[in-house]
Image (tube, rainbow, N blue to C red):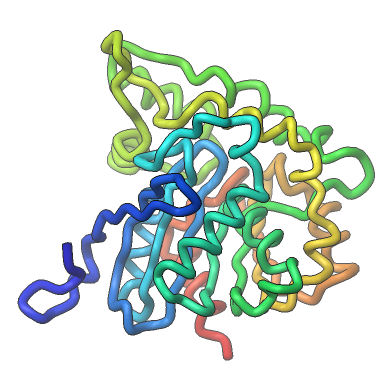
Length: 295
């Protein structure tokens, strides 16, 4: 499927693409003109690339935008070796493989939660430091300020539910569940909640409806080193924008301030929002757009 219709690039609707990277089939949506600079939008732990539809539609006016589903999520392949594959090291390798396959040398990167952690590890690796020119970290830090990252309240909250996604009889029941666990995400209208749920659900064999991810992605937390990114953080050479939800329990203010000790970056706080800002309002989109345009 081509990105052009009658010679005119369609920036309002994405193309759905699949590529096999390192033996795993990866799904991603693609927006805008491939001749423009590329923005990668990478989602959080249990989510998928469709979380960025609103942001990507805006960015596609000036950028080529790709929004992957991490393996084990959305339409990407589930792993047959989850203990080995569901970890940041593998996600980084897949991201690099995708950029190489698409022949993209350098990108701007918008990463929500896990998507930002993947970017920190990629951009903080010496041989890949030039791959990301502008890095937007959406409500994710480099670790904990004093205790272990697993002691951060938001991390404990996520661990408590990620390995056992529930099944419901109806779409509405799943939507109400999402309203509960993502109540601080910044999604507000009923239409937005419908889209949020529709873009991240699947029918199970027995007929129930549930979140569209492999429950075994919870094995990520066996890789405790994934949550400690300070060494990578200190090595990043990209321009950095850190977006933080004012009431976030995943990126406490003390962690954000500790990050300031070893990097110079811009920080924006989104009022009355927790983990993680949805990047779906005019104000939030404007913050991202202005940063990505910086020289």
